[in-house]
Image 1 (cartoon, rainbow, N blue to C red):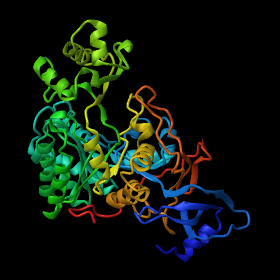
Image 2 (tube, rainbow, N blue to C red; image 1 turned 90 degrees about the vertical axis):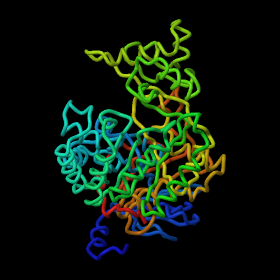
Image 3 (cartoon, rainbow, N blue to C red; image 1 turned 60 degrees about the horizontal axis):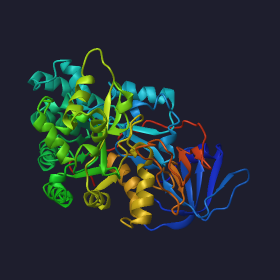
Image 4 (spheres, rainbow, N blue to C red; image 1 turned 180 degrees about the vertical axis):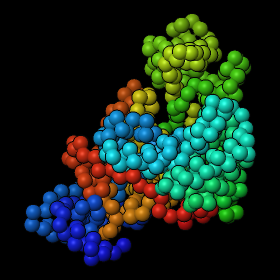
Length: 500
């Protein structure tokens, strides 16, 4: 995109930074090339063989890859970012933009939430969806464990439309969680129409991610088709051994849907375990039914596959599997699960619970990672035992690119940058190109890797030395600068039925 004379004059008054000697992988998927990159203000102003100007800051990228900043397609940093605006766990992964408002939960109204980010200043760029669960709660109050009335749906549609008009990317849902799980498909179609009419898309933590995952994705297709908008599967996975091996079938369903006019993509994090509430191990809220718990534990490989990552009522249980707690306490595994639910359901509230569950196959995960329809995410939030919030993007680059050769470096970076930028309608982002915003990452392709584990979930990744957000270094020579140049990013195009 050409720079205007006015913008060129404004840039001439600002100091510049020249990144020299690196291999530029520009985010388009094209092969990397040797080039220098000049940053002035918040923009990239030149890419090529450039000579330093007098007084210009020069950064050597010899032996490094220079890439666009990574876009986390599904993030929960909105839970803690205003308290930790430097977001070091994210910038050390190369993340420069986080997409929040996920799983049906968002700020309300988003116009005010956006104002908070712009006034408080954070290191990351922020984009958001409008959360179905949040909107449902505002309209229905505490009486939300039922189908919505026609009038309530009409009110919800108005609130979604207002959020999308104020820059939301569209509508998000969390259909395994309250209150989203009490909605029916027709309600979601109506809200999808409201989002789509105003230019947005639909993204969903689907109603089921294990035994009925195929039914759940069919519901997503129905919402997209009848709502006349494109859709995305949040943190796509197959979380039950009974349906392992279905990844190719799901991708074929997405391909077939596109032929019928419905564009569906997905995001994925690079781990075979998920993090959520223990309650989602069973498919109903009948927590007294022992047979449901027995089947739920069996489907994920047994009680030793369920790690209690957070447990307020008894800290001695935290960090242990349900199997370990069962052996330690002398109680059977189902009783332990039921006690966890009971202890975190009573009033007054005694503390939260959270589990990390190893329930996916490597083969399915790798199929999703390799697919050109799938971008990457962390699904990350601070405080849990899952390492994804601190390690996801370096893990892709280190394990699945360098070690397993599942993707080329160019393919992986495209799926972290240009692909999500285009998908979500981010103007002038996601590529190394003159006129684009200077969200830039310097990484060592030979060393980049994650270090976080369930025992040390906040261990920082390595191999990413410098990160720029809107032209300002937030990580420089492996040290966080404390700068907070992030901006709210609003959708700039209609994300309709076809996302191309």
